[in-house]
Image (cartoon, rainbow, N blue to C red; front, side):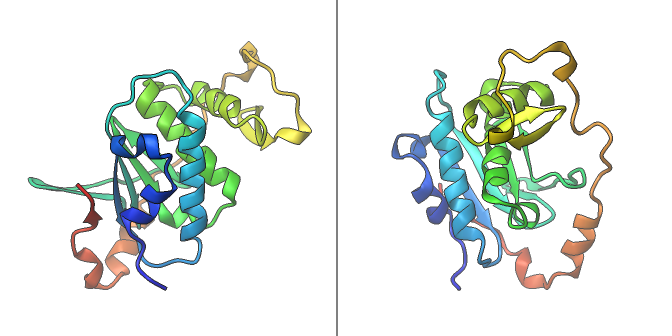
Length: 196
């Protein structure tokens, strides 16, 4: 199995959007990588029809812990437990350790949520989830603060007052991701492959 490369992810993105996405890929080979590339591509395909002015974003697929190599240093992110993805400004982190374990639809949802946070400047988790459910309404619905199969629920927009609920407030930090990193061999400390 060959090492995953940024070009693999870029190939899955809609051609019109590739110039706006700077991809970094720092993950070990995994049999779930091709599926994740397809999920990322589908998320961007769904999102591309929102009438926004696209700007350049960084999309970083990384093993734990999420790390950003910069000319002036190293930034390590300690995510909340179970967090599959996160946006920090124009940087979207995708955690391979979480995304390789889940089904395709959840992978798409995770990427759509972070695109919503980053490109639409939506900070509220519930609102972001409602937007994702709207963009991916043929597959999911947002019900009682959770995603559910769209076939089991009738989508409604706008959400009712009782539907607004924070998702991540009670989750602890995943400090174990730092321990996993120290247990890996030192060969992974090399700078990730990044296409400029």
